[in-house]
Image 1 (spheres, helix red, strand yellow):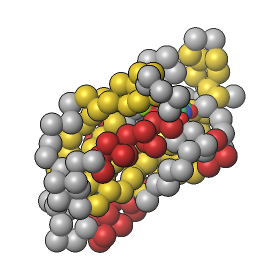
Image 2 (cartoon, protein in one colour):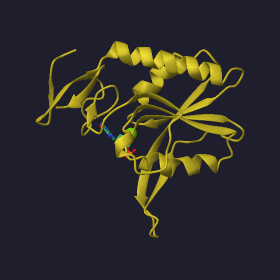
Image 3 (cartoon, helix red, strand yellow):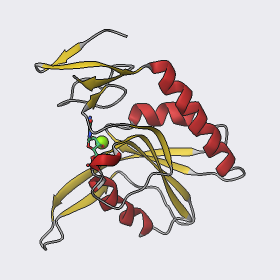
Image 4 (cartoon, protein in one colour):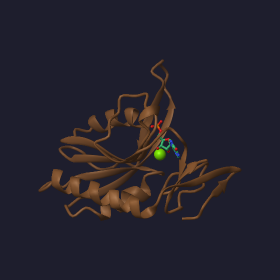
Amino acid sequence: MTQEITVFGKTFVPFIDRHKIQQRISEIASQINQDYEGEEPLLIGILNGSFIFAADLFRALTINASISFVKLASYKGTTSTGNVVTAIGLDENLQGRHVIIVEDIIDTGKTLSAFIPEIYQRGPASVKIATFLTKPSALKYDVKADYTAFEIENKFVLGYGLDYDGIGRNIPDLYQLK
Ligand code: IMP
Ligand code: MG
């Protein structure tokens, strides 16, 4: 792991290395393999941030799982309810499916709290959430992950799919703002 990384003038320091990440992912995958034994769950990765975690988690599964990805577009609703989220590219039939939503990080929980009702509307058999990271002290919405690789403090992180203004997603380890 490189000592420090600078992106747009901000310095990031090593936080969680790739081996530790892979170790946690195999633990979560074992849990999912057990929980969904005999089932064929559908993982839905939320783009862009989750694609690396989703790929590693998916590869570590031994059950017959499928995977699909969505991009979320948020726009202001006409009422005071605030932002409305639309899922772009969700063409799968979710009727009766066991869905596992895959996210890079639950920060305030806003994204998932808007997206989950959309999933339920499509009649799945069950819905669970797998996230690479959670920042419990930043949580503002009622969202709870079922599978979490790491709970971290409320500091900005970079790498392993997570970006700072589009940069840093390809860094194999996780870095934290200095
Ligand atoms: P939420 O809707 O507040 O839970 O925010 C979730 C989204 O914010 C994630 O999917 C990320 O794209 C982004 N995000 C939140 N915290 C970080 C961070 O520390 N680094 C990079 N992206 C972050
Ligand atoms: Mg994201």
